Length: 187
Image 1 (cartoon, rainbow, N blue to C red):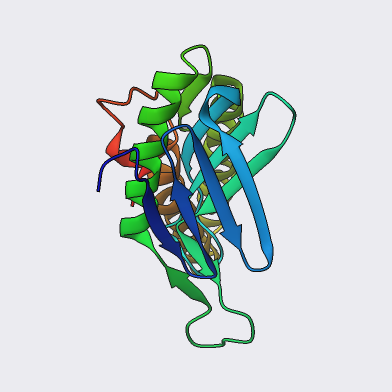
Image 2 (cartoon, rainbow, N blue to C red):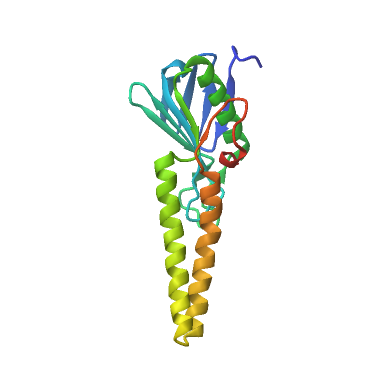
């Protein structure tokens, strides 16, 4: 299928149609159209959720103020054991095509991968500070002979570090070049 004919990507609760100059997103009963030339910014990032660590987000902002946020997972209402539906391949394909088309039609639009520098630094400071604080409390507990408390605190610090390391490395601020999309922000 040529770009002029379009490209259709299924969402768990809808679909996205990429035309030669605009994209239509149908999500449930709602439908919106976005012209690539009217894009102000596009960002891809790693956004883990409570039960789904391997989650990613696409943020599109238009010059008229409209926004679109899509995740590679969709909540499944009422589901207990499988609360999310994944569409990793479609999300990656959509992200790659959208970056390419916005770079072509809106060359001045900001394209970024990961967090902004300020947000990334704040997350790194908070994460390192929290891990350091819990590790310090573990050392204090150990110094007064509370080995069980120290062990629990060290386990907590290790768990926090295990979450923060991939979160920070995947969201490190990077440019979003259509020919070199960082794999850290795609499923």
